[in-house]
Image (tube, rainbow, N blue to C red; front, side, top):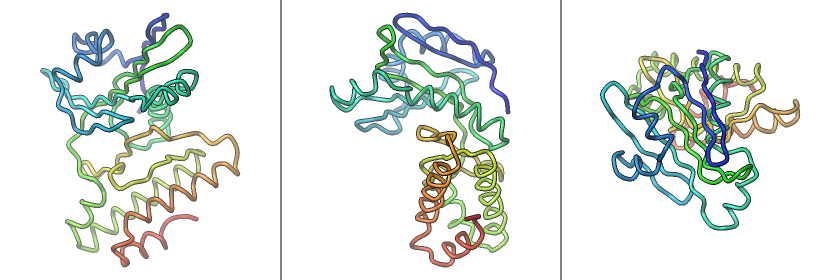
Length: 229
């Protein structure tokens, strides 16, 4: 999956979007994303660092992720760094080129003061899917487990081949949709700068994935034996 892109940067804002999603809703989000999130969207998750909301209008149903700042110090540190929304956008394009399935990215938005960043937002298509843990534990037959196991192995093999670390391999970030495995939450995903850094990140990804099954020893052993080391 390739991602088309239209971008714009000014003193107050920077954004990029897939022109296929051009619409009044996207225009309104670019102008004032907080208003849409706070008055029209359904809040799915909210904590000190992120707000996740779902918005639906006519033919579109999107997930909007707003990256909040915890305090002044956190805000100052984020001002000069690559925003998490832009990282999600760039890694979505990279994941798409590798053949790893992801929900289609719609746009990213950064609020700015010149070169300094404040809040940022990442938008992708909403997909009615079930996370891998729920899927496997609700379909305990060996055939389902074997098929899903193979998809996970292929995912890890692709990450190794491409040198990408996901950074947060929780079961909730791996979804099953129409028997396909989708990867979400690319906030911490990175293209490793060298082999040593990749191996470090890969071990963390593998460990975090296996941790999902620590209360299911049979599944833990199956995945541990199947995943490349």
